[in-house]
Structure formats: structure tokens, C-alpha cells
Amino acid sequence: MTATTQDRAAVTGTIRYWAAAKAEAGLAEEAYRAATLAEALAQAKERHADRPAFVRLLDICSYLVDSEPVGGRDRAQVRLTEGGTVEVLPPFAGG
Image (cartoon, rainbow, N blue to C red; front, side, top):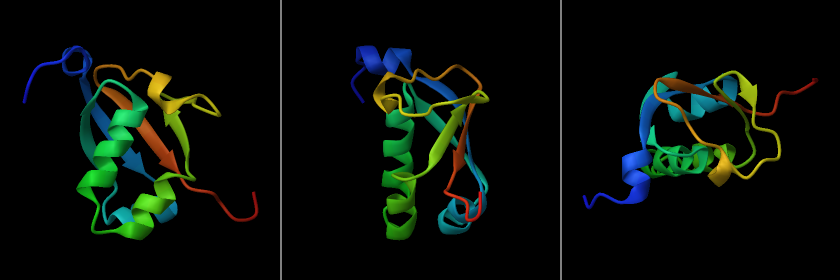
């Protein structure tokens, strides 16, 4: 892999999947190495390309990065921190 500015800025952390995201991914959490939330999600989609329902679900989930809601921010602008955590929260019925 060629080192780019993005590669040098990449950090490692954990993605935690909750509820339907956990069921569709087939696991509760996994590691990432990425600079932004968009990169981490793209990697998750690539790793789980054989699970199309999971890949689609990631597009409608809400996200917390280090306990802070991402909301409507551009995921490519959400920087990740070394040792950080991304929480993947699918839409919940009734609330």
C-alpha cells in the first residue's frame, strides 16, 4: 500500500454494532484503521460485501463517535481518534 496523507492520518479503534446492525454484521464489534468515519464505514461495507442487508443498513444508521452524536454532519469530515469507538445505531422501532 502506498502511504498517502490519509494513510498517515489513519488511526485504529473499534466499531461496535448494536441491535439489527449486530445481527446483520454477524458480530458485535470489529477493529478499524481509518482517518474518518466515512473511511471506516467504507471499510466495513467492503469487509461485509457478502451481507447486502448489512451494507444497506449502514446507510440509514445513526452514529456516535467517542460518545458524541454525528447527526447530519458529513461523515467524511468526522475525524476519528486513536483508540476511539464508533457506535453503529440502527433505527429503532417505537422510539
